[in-house]
Image (cartoon, rainbow, N blue to C red; front, side, top):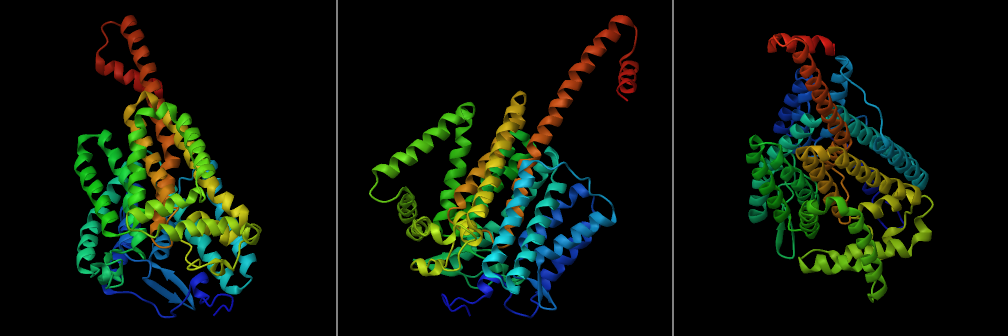
Length: 471
């Protein structure tokens, strides 16, 4: 136990039980997924990775020599081994977003170790780096172009359609049917409302994940009629998961995603909206009796959440700046009632790693938004592409809002890093389609010239000529 605030060390470093925990159904799902990872083509690996990585709870774990290997890490090890054995890496050139993720991850690890200075902290952060970078770069390799992005969104829609009905049943019965694969069998209750969590480790995470995916599913509308049934299924599942979680953060995340989608009409004037938002926040901070972040308390309280706790967490974070700015702090639990519960990703970054880690975390979001903006500009000639890029950006914004009320600490990181991989892929697939468009224009000009020179040439012969010309 840590005497400073009487919290067990495994709350910060992980660990806990020294026994493996694996249900029969979870073992079968993992085994099938691992076999499929080795058998399927690289582009299809995302299907078993998502299916087993999301549906099997993070608590499913194999312990070897005191080291814990949760389900997601087992899948990552199998996927990377498969890529290495079949030499199917197809590495990519790192962009600024990729570098920002690496910088944030190493800052997080280094400053956390400096803060705690124990072997438990070292073990925890090594595992963090392997999971974080292993997950991010795996999905970066698997999600490379537009087809990969749409495939990933479709798979996520199907999985949310599986999870949502069981979460709604759980919301009314308090029985979690995902207990058959290792989730807790009985759900938590707050303010007389049952909070469903499905296969995730917390109701807020379950609801927020569903909510942040809603814009992605909506983005399928402009990608062809063959996707629209899944669109409806995915959107309904997202809303169902947010409601079943009985938490305010998922509902605010849903509202943020819908609002971002509705701003499509003003996509060329977003600079005005950004500055207007900044000025509005500053003005409210000047005229309100309480700091502006206490608006979270009002919004959360109006829909039955713990908004006051989140507002107080930010308030304490600001007022105790001198305690955490260098390498973080171990004393946040002493800041006030329930201040050990750091359910804010921005605050968690600062408390766990100081000001550098805090800014590194924000840099990941900043570079993600910049890439979305550049990709949308490139995609202006194709509304289908521009709409898809906008939907990915809307999902990113919804997740940013959600981060004010949650930290991902289970298999939800697989979805978060997949979203970042989609952000990175936008510029690539937009540029590819732009090149194809330019090539078609060149080919059309060449076709006209050939037909002028050789009027009697058949279309088959002309096509063959162009094919040879392009080689």
